[in-house]
Each structure stands twice: as C-alpha cells, then as structure tokens.
Amino acid sequence: MKQLEDHEAFETSSLIGHSARVYALYYKDGLLCTGSDDLSAKLWDVSTGQCVYGIQTHTCAAVKFDEQKLVTGSFDNTVACWEWSSGARTQHFRGHTGAVFSVDYNDELDILVSGSADFTVKVWALSAGTCLNTLTGHTEWVTKVVLQKCKVKSLLHSPGDYILLSADKYEIKIWPIGREINCKCLKTLSVSEDRSICLQPRLHFDGKYIVCSSALGLYQWDFASYDILRVIKTPEIANLALLGFGDVFALLFDNRYLYIMDLRTENLISRWPLPEYRKSKRGSSFLAGEASWLNGLDGHNDTGLVFATSMPDHSIHLVLWKEHG
Image (cartoon, rainbow, N blue to C red):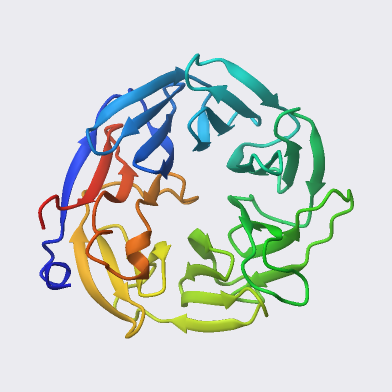
C-alpha cells in the first residue's frame, strides 16, 4: 500500500512486432493476444516479452483466445476461429452487416456471441458456425458482449445460469442464453433516460455486479435486483474509464494516468503516468491484466500485468507490478 501511495509499485515495458495499428487486445493467464491492421494476430508471453504465436488473420476489431484457438471479430463484418498451432481458419461466421466489435464464447455451451455496428447481437453455434439467434433492440453500435455465469439468485435467474450482456454507448441489455429463438431482453440499464450521458468502456460483469463508468461517475448495479447499489463520483477527474473492479480496489484511467481507487473509502490512492496514446472509443485497445489483487492484496497477487494499451507507433505499452517490490 505504501508503494502504491508513493507511486512506486509498478514498472513498464513494451511489446514490439506489429507493423500497423493494434485495435484488439485480450489477456489471460500471463498471455496477451494482439490483433492488428497488419492482418495478423500475435500471442505474447508477458513475463518474457516473447511472441509465442503469430498467425495471419483478417482485420481484427476484437479478439479472445484459449490454449488451442483464437476467435476474432472483424471490420470485414465476420467472425473467425483460428487454430494457433497451424494458423488455419477453422470456422467462419457470416451474417452481420456491420463491423463486429466484440466477441465472447463458451466451449461448454458450444456458443459464440458477437456484437456489431449493425446494432444486433448474434448467437452462434461455436463448432458448427451456424447462427442460432439474432437479438435486436439496440439503436447504436453494439460495442461489448459478455457471456458470464450468474452467481446470485434473483427473480429471473439462478446461480449457474449463463447470462449474456450487450452494451452500446447508452444502454446495457441483459439476455437469457437459451435455445428459444424469440429471446426477450430481460432488462435494459442506463444512466440517463434521455440519452444525454454516455457509458464509457469497459463494462464489468462478474456474475454479481454490473459496473460501468460514465460522465456522472462509476455506476454499480446489483445483478440480483438490477438496482443501482451506488454511484461513485470522482469530482477531481472527469471521464474516467473503468478497467477493473473488485471487492477492495478499482483500476481506472484517463488519457494521462492509471488510477487505483480504494472502494472502501472511494478515494484515489495511487496514480501512474501513461504515455501519450489515443484511447479507443470502444475500449478494445486497452485492458487490465491480472485481476485478483482488486479483491485485496494478499502478499502473492501483486505480480504480472496490471495494464496494457496499444500505442500510435504500433507497439504495446505494458504496466507491470515491480518484480521485487
């Protein structure tokens, strides 16, 4: 905590290898995936800075990966699935009529979801590549989709149910993820009825709470009741974007600094300078790394990646916990 308060807890490094703008980032278990306008996706080992895999793709607006495969949402209006080891495209999902800005998938359900500039969310059979459902109701670009297990009991869902969230710049919609074709939206959340206030990326949903930032502050909804639990104001700094949210800390940032908020006091306890870069409107080109420390520092979880963002020179800027704090 002292190192955080003295702004001495972190260090930085860069990943260099792309030859055009990197639009899409995804982080998991020490590995960072980058999708670029140079028509490639790379998988990096964050601890060594080494590129583990590099494959040729289409233009990437969104990426998500696991050990075997990479799923990409593209500005060419399609979603594709690729095999890391061979670089082969194993599945192509066609049907959107606008850029695909967000993808998520679940192997257990054999489902892929995609959000697009055509204002729709599509649900696909992951292995077969067929479209199972098109969800309508958004009136803006759908910039985020999240597939997540519910962790709380409510009138509409039980713990263990899979829930789909989709977001545009004004609204967050909650959908059941079933097989019925005429799937109805369970609930629409927003911070202003008259659309005067935009939501900022990124959307956080952990199965218990939905959190999103806006010009009015950080909104936290209780997923069991859909009630607003609290609105955290940051009067000294406007337009803070949310990176990560836990039981104890939130990670936030603006165009100049990374901030850590202690959620028990709602005070900003630390900041870290960021280099000049363009913050993407959709929130695809920056992310938080390891998240467990947000639930409290335990002496072991202050390691690895804190934050990554793509830079104008096509590199990736990394903020890491200091090796020997």
